[in-house]
Length: 191
Image (cartoon, rainbow, N blue to C red):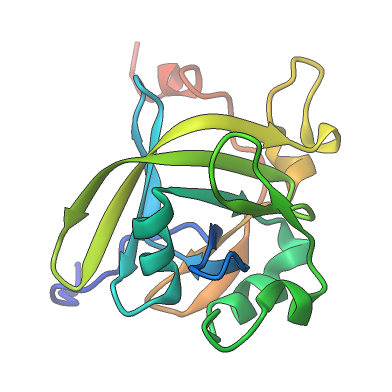
């Protein structure tokens, strides 16, 4: 039997991503987000939702660009910290010993130490209530060679990605490979 938990933000898992932007003074900043994901295939787009009160919100509105640095478990503590303090008062790159890299394609920095980077130019802005959703057209995806397989696809076992579970407020490493997409479904049907 299912137990009703009410209207909560408990879709799980959610990403644990670092959104990069430059503030009005040109300082690189990152913030941790969980409300985000791919939202269109053509053009390739990614959406992130931020509260207007955040330092990053104003930066994205002004620069019309952002990056998403997707961390590995090695950056889990840094990812959590980047969501605990504001870039208005803290240079998160310096505090965490991370390297800000200026994107050559969009007006935003990314985290050099993260294994997967998505560079986005703002295509749409939607006011949703407490959050603003920024839909970014993906201009490029950059991956560390060490996380790619022999066909240049991201190997999740090598990347060691993790996720966030909102209701439990926990980070969880992604686990064992359970099968090939668009293939294992064949075994679900009798006959």
